[in-house]
Image (cartoon, rainbow, N blue to C red; front, side):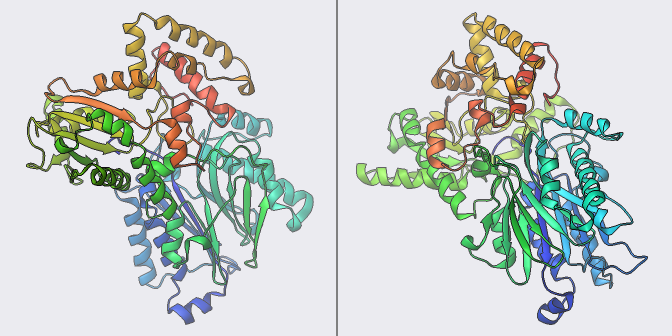
Length: 578
């Protein structure tokens, strides 16, 4: 993806189901659990850029010793820093990370603070082991404000507005209430249900209690990913299936998806239970997981991304006038590579049918180590375009079309300011930017960092069309409807912006985006083509969470967010909608 897009965090929960000396005898190390957790986190490293945290809980700690240890990092490379520090302690004989339960988290902050106390795992301490709670997760809630009101009604004074803090406090409240009424034979699933049924948003979160009980819970729409595996030695939950496969050398079929609304309970004795905790709702798993976030070494994701490339063929052929002889194909590294393979396979089949050869290669090369600290804005802009370099001599100046595949275009800043200017140096006759995703039209409130409308190039294109056609009154009308709806309950919300988009066809929106992305100095012709929502559904049939493209949010809070975003835009408030 050319744009920087912050997204979901990553979480890993590991329970060793045998006595610790079993792993020492079989694997020759007391750090078996830590080593496996480190591998789980490394294989999900793309999910954490701002912070990392690891917790270890021991069964039956000696009196006078804590039952848990927590370490966090917000260094420039937090995971590497964290693993190195813990590794040194282990090598020096420290056994704090030789417990039976481990919890790891990778934080990719969509907003908020970057201090250590904002990193997971969060801890609620107590001198009673059954009341000690450590929690980490991948979540964003849209109704944090109402949950804070709930806490205050219960007599609490919330010291933070962060959803992680609110979840921890609510869960602790119901846990302590259950313990007071039922003792240690309380129903943990009921506690999780009481807490999570109040949430509006997306979540997969994991927790460990000081008495050795652990759990994982996924939201009822299945918006956030969650996977689980267990055998005689371990039980593990994580955000991505390939991470579990890599760490434990298991087959794809052995790693099961945590079903929407399902709780996985790992008891103190290591036994595993699956319980329906929340009534499953219409499944709306986030499709950006398939397009971009999760790694493509998951077999299903790999096939889906290739199909996304295949389904772009009609738009690409139209854009190049079916001139295969004078077209060079490439992609924007690195996440679009598998999708590009799908595009190429279809092009090769077409080439065989037509007796044409297909020319392709890597044109854009991202300089991952490029940094600039120049203060002058004009100079910085000139340097910014050199984040990417190009391969010279492959495109025939003035004769070739250049097709570059990107997995999605959100803001368009990098495309306009860095990629297109440097591609134009190759002097192609025409540049076609093909996006494997549809245009992102609406803000997201479930984790992706798209919380204001003015960030989205598709919305800016809509505004330009309305201005051109003297139809800004339509946006004014939608704004007033949104104002009125925001005064009522979330359950009565609708997407007030959706009707405005329907004033224009997908092609008109695409053409307007092309105009906005085109740099003033660009000499080549430019066209931007997008995936259709229909073909996105065909490519990823089990992942229908496409609200950023369609405006069809899975929870009532989503409609509140889009209406608040519209009000903020019309009132010139540059602030988040949730």
